Image (tube, rainbow over all chains, first blue to last red; front, side, top):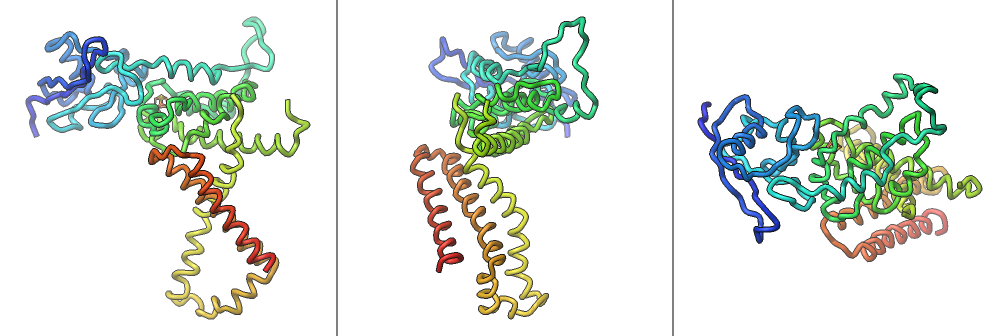
Length: 247
Length: 115
Ligand code: SF4
């Protein structure tokens, strides 16, 4: 099959000027080796300099080029043009306000991420001179998968609960909380539970699993959340049955 | 933020879900296909035998425990499904779902352990 050109239908929106979003259609050359981001870059360089979008690494590492392409949240650098038909519809990530065109406002996510303390809370602080916190390969294997998150937010776009409840802490932040909870060098779990085990935390999740399906780094945030639910349920009943142990 | 009380219903939900995933296929096979396929005679499910099962203390427990968990699983699942469909009256839905499960539980306790 040989195709000469492909039409990109790209959502445009400047909240300061436009009363509502609209689509602009651009005709770009078809190239078997192009990812969709290449086609968008072609538009920016040759057809319309006002088109606004985020990207950086072009290799599925930086997490900034997430978009909804033909209805699915994907990294546009990780999705080949050849896998689509003659028309490709490109929209910003869902469940976030649009800043401009394909750029969304992620302040709310950044705040949620900070709220779960996504860093190691050590038992005793060590200075650099005192050396590193030792960890065995087996201890690393327990949480390694959850370290792969690149904060691309495809999971927030795919999650129906994020759409229904804007307060929901959401898949990536909860998966990252789980990552630190599982880390042998960390003792911050109890402090994280205040957010993680609250109603807007893990309990807002109804295990639809869309987050894990769209995740480009196979983080499987849905699994992280279900494992956290089990751990928090055990906590809950342990606290209930042994109230004298509560801190 | 206050920790949620959801572990109570979620604990039952998770236990019931695991049980229904593992046990129900076997139950469906035993009840639905075993006799039809001729693995054992229909007498296995005769009234007398079922009555004897339900009269035995261990039998009572085997009937009660999985059914209890699975009813609560269903209640929580329906509540969440209603929420997924955008029904915002969560308090009412929760009362209806858990209320039905509670009625079922009481009915079972009555039938198995009291009547
Ligand atoms: S969990 Fe996966 S989909 Fe979600 S932000 Fe991280 S890498 Fe992206």
